[in-house]
Image 1 (cartoon, rainbow, N blue to C red):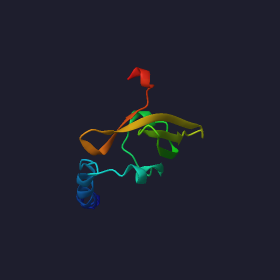
Image 2 (image 1 turned 90 degrees about the horizontal axis):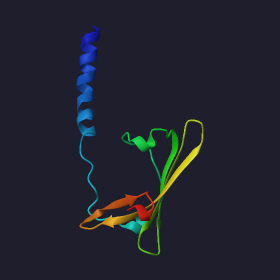
Image 3 (image 1 turned 30 degrees about the horizontal axis):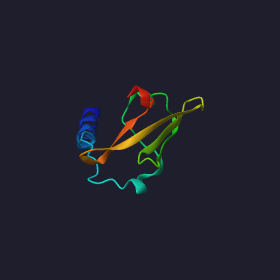
Image 4 (image 1 turned 45 degrees about the vertical axis):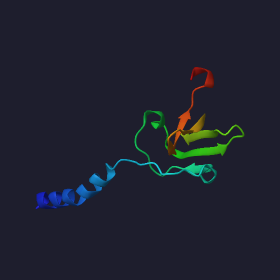
Length: 109
């Protein structure tokens, strides 16, 4: 009796698993003035630099006078400690919906 239920559950989940594997596409044009501000993360794919993040995951984008975009990513760990990383983003030439972000100091790039 349990096997048919298990198979039915698996069959119902197959479309969801297929949908999760669709490639992420950039928007055709990015209006950076509308993109600026603070964004709160509700879900993410696993990445090594976020493995200690447990809550309050945010990304803030500010327009700079030099035409670049200031980036500040932050989150709280399980013990409540706030971790932040600051970087700079610039539009990718030939790909108007994408940004290239650098968190390393400029002299290293």
